[in-house]
Image (tube, rainbow over all chains, first blue to last red; front, side, top):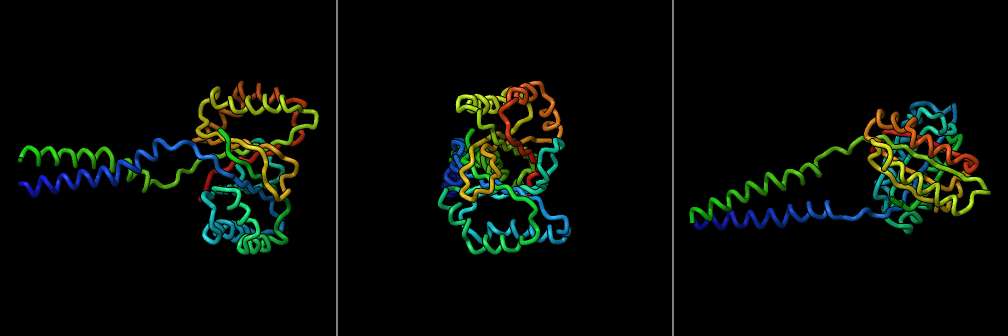
Length: 133
Length: 133
């Protein structure tokens, strides 16, 4: 019975150390100020749906090729306001630092992606900001 | 000793049920698909810094006046790429549903904010998207 009690005690300590700590961190962390990189595109009329899929996949692959991107999401316009100035795609990247963003811009993988867009971009809009509440 | 073993067992079960479950949820939950509402502005040259602060504060106050906004952040352009087309401010709102966004647009507080911008907006760009990884 002593062995069972000891085993249970080890389990309790293990659970407290291994589980309660991450839970607490998740709850108490203050909102982090991060660098957002918002990229919007209008593609040319001659860009086919297949080419669009390739472009979307190529952009989505950048976080696997370039370090320092801490967040990535994207989507296509569903606003009913008609104030998107023809822009249809939004890619929303997050960097932990200015240095990470500055390393991303001239990175060979980013440059190669940019080159692959040749002839497909009608309009582009890029705005970076430090997130404030 | 039997009592100690039983107590330990209760503790283990309690920890597993009360702590491991939220942890597991955090880890296994699929990324939530949310509706983003991206608003970018260029303000007129005659808009004073004080008026800009009022506009920023008025936009920031909207989540306290309109239900359904589950995320809000904003910032001013720091991109070195010069592809922001004159747009200087980005407001990034999140809605849990299309219904919440649709209720936000004609909401009196949103309409009043829009009216307060009269004479101050040189350019605006609005793009909504459902977030995809």
